[in-house]
Image 1 (cartoon, rainbow, N blue to C red):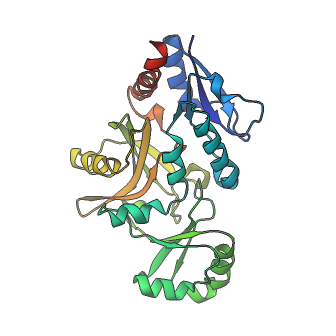
Image 2 (tube, rainbow, N blue to C red; image 1 turned 60 degrees about the horizontal axis):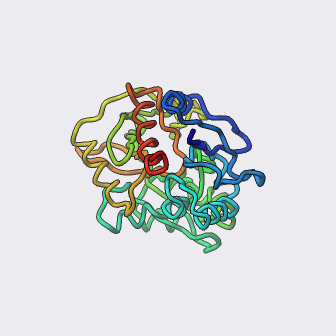
Length: 291
């Protein structure tokens, strides 16, 4: 019986309830599915036929150990999905700047390396933004994200400077569509569209994560939006098991906010047939082993 490991973390060591839906499909096909904490030193990753990063949700708190784990797994030729080199390139959200440079529709993003001594008011004036969202370049669940504006930039400078001393930052203009229309999350398996949700923040907030009162509902995007997200996904130079593209709709175009290919929540319970499609994508990666 082949065995697939779903990578988890110390804070959430078990397989989450949505991923369990796909695990049940795999088990019905004769595949064992087990959780495995990424930084558990007792785990021999070569014992698994396939390893799928799922809820390694503390990676941004330990970015260097996580990157070292990915490199060790890569050197041991473990069948890891998504591939280590792609995930390593995705950990720092500076990739958004690179995608924009390649002509992709990306929410305008300014990258600031740590400890460069930038002045928030100057950055906002240079970018021409009245309001901005500031977030760590390596982060998850909107941790460390906050809003500022020209009117408060000088008062916010101390907070901004302290954060920049500790970590790389991204600045993006505040996008009112997140609150008024919702933020799209489109999920793809093996490069094929599967399902989507619309996420909205709580009243008065900008963060769509449920930890901050955000909500998600099943929704079906227009074909044009699916195709535009697909064109962004095509910029990745390696086949992916899964991807979640988060973004907004503005003036008939899809603007990317994040390309999630490390450990995104996949909202499997929100899409009819989504657990089956995810399981089938994993089975295709297992096929050479099973043969």
